[in-house]
Amino acid sequence: MAVISSKRGMDLVLALDLRGKRVLIFIVAYNAGTTIEKVLSRIPASLQQPDVEVLIIDDSSKDDTFLSSLRYQRAHSAFKITVLRTPENQGYGGNQKLGYRYAIENHFDIVALVHGDGQYAPEKLPALLAPLLSGNADAVFGSRMLDKQAARSGGMPLYKWLGNQILTGFQNRMLGTQLSEFHSGYRLYSTRALAQVPFEKNTHDFHFDTEIIIQFVLRKLRIVELPIPTFYGDEICHVNGLKYAFDIFRSTIKGRLCRMHLFYDRRFEVGSEAAAHSDKLGFPSSQSFAIERCTGGRNILQLGLGHAHVADELERRGCRVTPIDFAANELAANSETVCLASRPQLPQDLSVYDQVLLMDLVEHLHDPEGFMDELRHRTAGRQPEVIVTAANVAFFITRIMLALGQFNYSRKGILGLGHRRLFTFRSLRALLEQAGYEVLEARGVPAPYPLALGWNRRSRILLALNQCLIRFSKALFGYQICLRARPLPHSHHLLKETISGSAGLRAEVLARVA
Image (cartoon, rainbow, N blue to C red; front, side, top):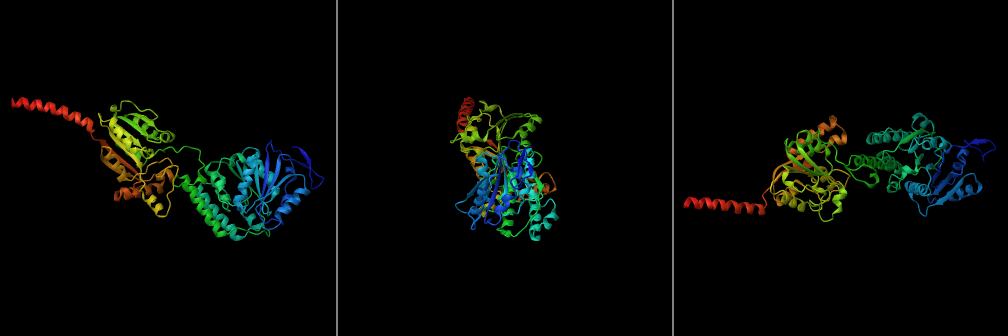
């Protein structure tokens, strides 16, 4: 700890050990002309260090916020202070985007958000910085609700106190978090963490704070809460409470649906993991359908985008499986089609296989018709049974969303981002029949509720209900299409067999006549 002289007096103050990190104290200000200088004067002297900078962004205030900030900047040299003013009002969220971009581009390690109206105590900055300086957090939130009664004592209006708890409870339930408060504006972020989330795609409005929490949660970044005092003075509230609550509700629901891969929103596209296929063997699914239709001892060629669970289970049942996974980038590499010569290389002799599994593959192909034609041609001598699974775009949820004007892609599911073709039961059957296959069985399977909700009573009830509805209409209630088909003899091979067989039959008939 270094010793420095406080500009607010002659006492010696211990400087906060920043551990070599650069800190930006970012003050968002709008119509804060009467409070901004007080806020600046309350920043602890322990932060008066070369690696600490204060950034004030006046969001086109209608009062003298900018002038007051400049006046303080000229009169006090203890801090490096930068004062900016937006050319036009950006809104609460838009102002934050500018400050965070400034922090990232100027290579700060930490950015601390402080409000220019004095509602959040700058005196707490050293304590809030501690988890970030020690590397134990990616974000630190100052919470007024860790001690709920202190929030009321600090002047938080009853309707805000109740609304805060109701919304926070709902958000915790939806996102699986345990935060005491989602709605504090006192926040400190690691710029390394900020750079990992698309915060610039967030709203310019007040629910920016909720959207960035959702992004941190989905990215699995570490959030720490520390208590702060509550202070409500005579500041003007610019938030429309009902609109704010509705925006919070909508963003949180979207975040939850994006986590479940049922909805796609670029703001919440923050996961780093690949969209691999999950294990769906424990309940009715396309994977269980494929396994049920394969008999032990058979030679099976499995083509798809990641279904290792299926191959493992088939081998456990005594099948000989050749699994070949196409990566999504390999399928996209060929803009014309993905034929059997595409990477990865397929076995040259396809006649040794009894069955071919096409696991969620055809919807990723640019030319599935050409693919099926080629497959039939290459296997015509053996005619192995083919099992095809694909997403059903006519699933009732997709139909409802379309009726509401939504056609929303997701990382997984029916409208997965990698899908290049979309199928219904009828269109997939037509594709196979026109490629020379006879469809032996068509079955719909329910949505994978256990993956979204966990294996519990709720998911079991939904599975059972979905299965009952599939009996009524698989085209409407089948989440995935499962078809079993066999290739009909190709005319080329059939003609050779016809000529050969006719020659033998002719010789036999002539021998009888003679």
